[in-house]
Image 1 (cartoon, one colour):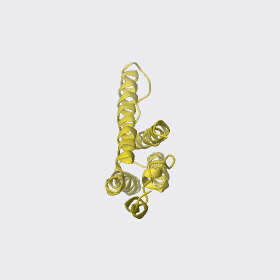
Image 2 (tube, rainbow, N blue to C red):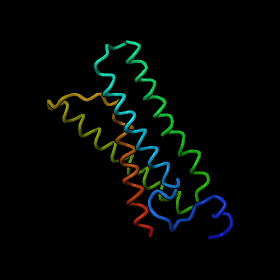
Image 3 (spheres, helix red, strand yellow):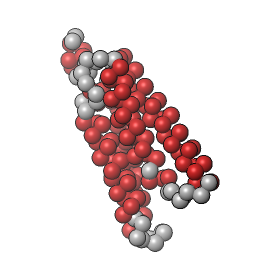
Length: 140
């Protein structure tokens, strides 16, 4: 490991989640749980109520954390880690598109309608975490 890698803390040979020190993946999964919990917690309240708006704002802040944090960390990664994250994000993008489209077709066929706003980001984060593990294993 050269001095630049030591300073930044990026070593391509580390395990899954090394791109963000593992803490980011955990933070992203926690934010996914916050988003789902807020979506479920808002259900008993009427649309437009102060409580429901507060839950929506919580979801917005959690989403912002998940979106903004990777941009800050990607610049500090070495080329291998950037490639791993690109592959992981690609898996998340494709997986989310497939799941969303497929369930949309199933809704048209009669399955219950889902409120996608509370579930898209958590699904994408989960698939990103899975993609990170898959990509890290590939480059071991």
